[in-house]
Length: 115
Image (cartoon, rainbow, N blue to C red; front, side, top):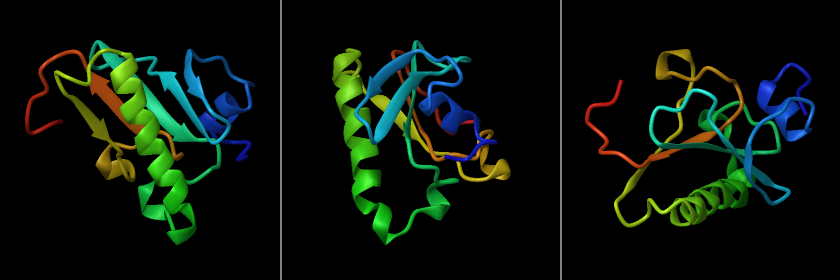
């Protein structure tokens, strides 16, 4: 745990959040500023700064994050219509919390290019 990280504090239940899923390795929470009817953040409990900081040792964890995102898309009823998965890397990439997370967005038509 990184004591300065908001998502680490949420994972440790020191900061409240609406938890959608918690399997011990991966936590999923509703975004506090949703950009779509369904906007959920899927993140590892382990502090990894971003996708750029993943190593070969994180292969199972990265796969688990994506699997959880798929399961939640199904549970939220957005799987059939489609959804978007996004992981921003660094400030210029739009990352505002330096803890790896994947945005699961759905429930409306997505446009391209984003942002």
